[in-house]
Image 1: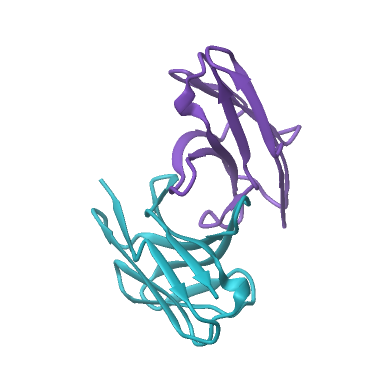
Image 2: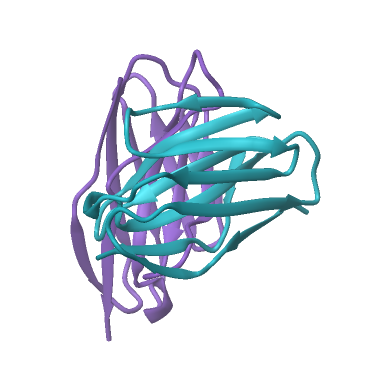
Length: 110
Length: 111
């Protein structure tokens, strides 16, 4: 079965600092991978998705970027964090018809 | 684009039945999903409808009407552990890779 590993679980960063969140996948090859962000009490906003190595689709213009250097690795980055980047970040993979999520990273930008 | 609407919050009693509605307007549709999310945790998959009708899975059932752009999640014999947010999501027709989520319905189950 597919497992999504995501770390860290929580992160507190100052405004203007860089960000790197990593997601790795086990149990499947060439998965579609996704980054979502969830603001407090809100739904999930699709940020990026990737269908393969080096292939990134961005959903909304923002202060973030994504990269897929390996088949089972998906990285979310920022050069300079903003207060508005705070939220719960979820990595997901698609298996058959469904999305499976990692455990998430709660990012607080102060 | 995608426009997915759900009630913000609902309250129900342990042992009762509750129906959570979801309406959507999309430029294309290829499947509707329901996820459960406990506070501070990742969403977990509950159900998937691509054709009209009712899909039953234990205490949970999900219904879809594509012509009406409408779905509901039915939870029977409510338990306290069912207190969570329930997210409705739609997959795009022209891009099977895109999944769009509603804002979620927070369900409070009371004794």
